[in-house]
Length: 156
Image 1: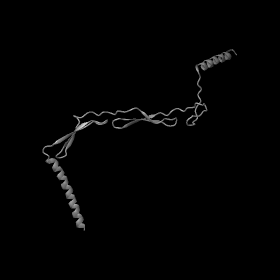
Image 2: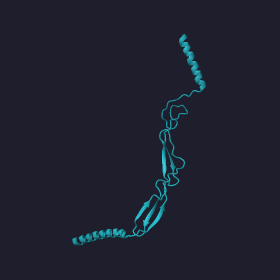
Image 3: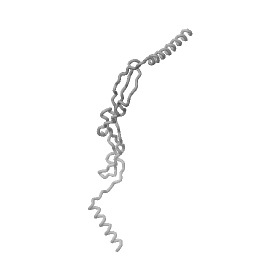
Image 4: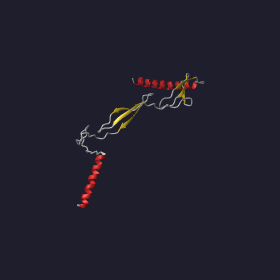
């Protein structure tokens, strides 16, 4: 039984070695290559090229001189994937019309909004500082009152 296993392993090894030599010999035996030429068009990221393939031995190579330069992506408009909020960034995406590849960018976190002046963000409830917005007339009244108070402090 041991001899049979040993004999089988030697036969398998010999067959593998012979098949390797047969492949090398067939490529070396190709005295004159007979190439077929296939034009591979450029993609967004890779240059186009001419592919030469020998029908006798399978030898092949690429010729980039005869090809075209990479096209570059043709991105469409930015589309919002996830809206930004006051607690999380958003995400925008654009897709290439040729290869369907995509590019993304983040939308910055929004400021907290307190339209009802409750002291809390209307969206998430986070405490916010209430900002008083004065009209130009209010600024003028405040300036006038400050001047009057200054005169009272001087002449009092």
